[in-house]
Image (cartoon, rainbow, N blue to C red; front, side, top):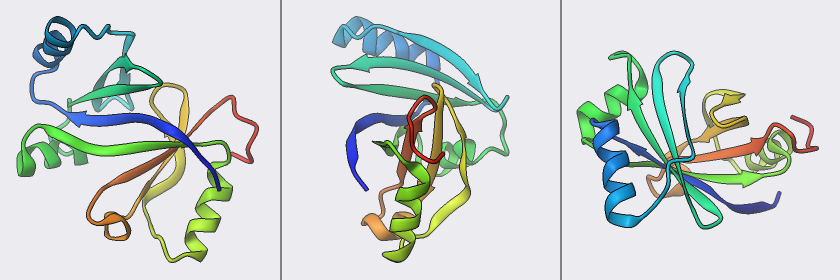
Length: 139
């Protein structure tokens, strides 16, 4: 398994437009695109070097992102690491005792295939592995 880069930082926000404005006006980042993910999340992407900030605003009060926002408030929710073979990476991590959270692999935002890893294996940090859908791995 090879992690090629930090793909994005996932940040849960309670005010998507306000967060976009802050990153644009105060830090000079540009909004590259927005999308609605699975009908339950509004997501905005702001490129930053070879990575991006993914601002996430829940639309559905029952979504795990909404639960996270209620329990923790706005802030960084996960770090996403890019791999070129998600299924191979999950098999290797399974051999190392790392559990997956939820359904995996599954379609993600921004044309990716994703899997979330159990935070207990990473000092409490929720790690997302993502593979671009155009990658040549087995996923």
